[in-house]
Length: 183
Image (tube, rainbow, N blue to C red; front, side):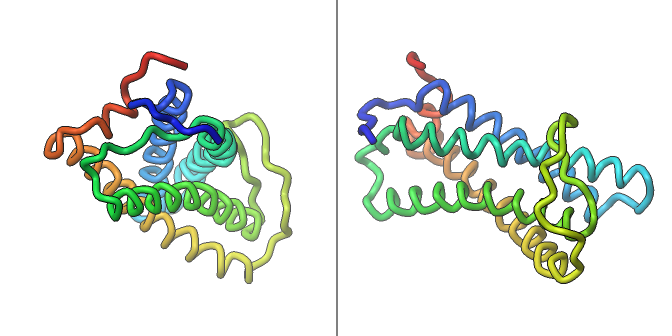
């Protein structure tokens, strides 16, 4: 892996970031609405189906994003950031990547264990890897729910940290994900 001595992420990394951020936030909001507000019935089933069709895209995009990140490293953080904070930022990013894998996988296991298909963008279903299994549901459901709350909180912290870098520290951290001259 080569070192990125530049100030910005590549345009591809930026696009993947913003596409995945949008997908995650929309899927999270739909999932929250279905689980906490929407009454049971056919409309709720359709909305859960929408949630699955959107959220499963993350499984495919995370593979591309991890490969891209490995072959196109992130720019170095400004020298004004302490080594401890650099390690914390790296740990937070790795945690987000891990969550972006575990959360949709737990959703798939929850659906399959409940006897439902796992659709992707209304194009196809991910082949069923497990049969209907109430014991699996009893594990996958709380993992999916609690991890979604943790992920939502981590995304809020991520956004707040980016805004702090931009408005308080006045460094290039936020701009590194929104500006660039190269592919």
